[in-house]
Amino acid sequence: MIPFSHTWPYDILLEDLYVQYCPFCDKENVILPMKPKELQNVREGKKKLLVFPCCKTSLTVIDTDADYLLFDRAVR
Image (tube, rainbow, N blue to C red):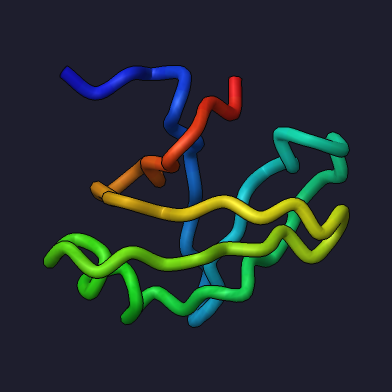
């Protein structure tokens, strides 16, 4: 069972992946340094280090689906 506390919703707009707000500093509409094509690599098992550009907090993305990123630690 996937813990909901380790997930965060994302959206894709054109070729940008973004979150409505950062779970750490609450900045709104944060564009992530990750491209939509990289989501498929993560789905296939390749982990991705993701650094939020607003506050420099780093997390490892371990899985994705069409709506959520799954991280290695709790974000909620």
